[in-house]
Amino acid sequence: MKLKKSCFFLGAATLSVVALPKANAANTAYAPGDLVLYFQQEGGTNTVYANLGSAAQYRGTASGVADGTNALNIADLNSTLVSAFGAGWASDTTIYAGLAGVFSTNSTLNTVTNGDPFRTLYVSAARTGLGNVGEAGSAGYTVNTNTGMTTGATGIATQNNVFENSYEGAIAISTTDISGIDDQNTFLSPGVQGTAFGIFGGGVMQQGQAGDLGTFGEEDNVEFALDLYRILAKTGLTGQVEGALREGSYEGTITINSTGGVSFQAVPEPSSIAFLGMAASAVLLRRRRSNI
Image 1 (cartoon, rainbow, N blue to C red):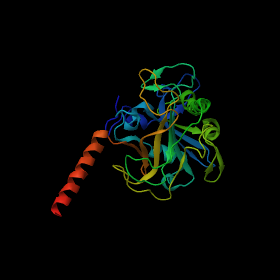
Image 2 (tube, rainbow, N blue to C red):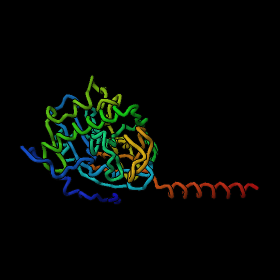
Image 3 (cartoon, rainbow, N blue to C red):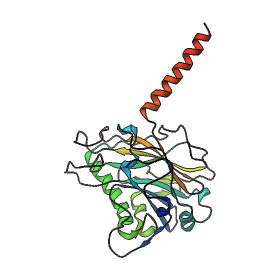
Image 4 (cartoon, rainbow, N blue to C red):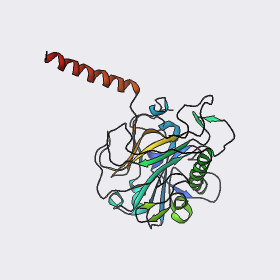
């Protein structure tokens, strides 16, 4: 299913309900391969999880097909973030956000689900600035070995399994001591993190801003801007959406604004890029002719 502009298959009403702790059974609002947005406050006691649905839905033109399209107001997290971190969460520089998703940690099966082989990693990197919509604003990731892919997949699954097994609903406020976020994205000192998921130096979480970053595409007052990368453990499998082996491809940017609205700005369609290129060439040709 494609993302649709200004809507999302889960619906804002579903995402406004915070998950409750439970004793048994898996979270029916979570499935392996879902993309989880998470927040944690340095030195705080709460972690926030928000399920954004299947990560493959955000796979954009960088991976060869136009699955991902702009989606505004995927979720409204303001009340949840206020409950977890206080009314001033949007200007709190001790809060960090990140994205992670993986379908399976299995390294032997050549199974493809929704165009992704097992151990396909979806992870975020913090943009260094807002920059241009449709272009990466971060360095991205490369995983050097097959073992590294297994390590990363296991780390993401370990983190997300707490959300899957301990809560019910699309959003959860978890106590930090059981969330597993600290174990996978370790804070070494204020504002500094260790290696995330056992493979990414510097972590995948972005620090909050004292003020907003500005306007990014169709989203105003951006507080967090997270570039989403897809990293393949295998290539050449039947039914998969191809990409470079163990080289992160930029799929688009998830933003969180000052009122807790979550949106996705996708990589532009190739046809749009071609059209813009032809339009620019036409303008340049007219200018040249006018100077003759």
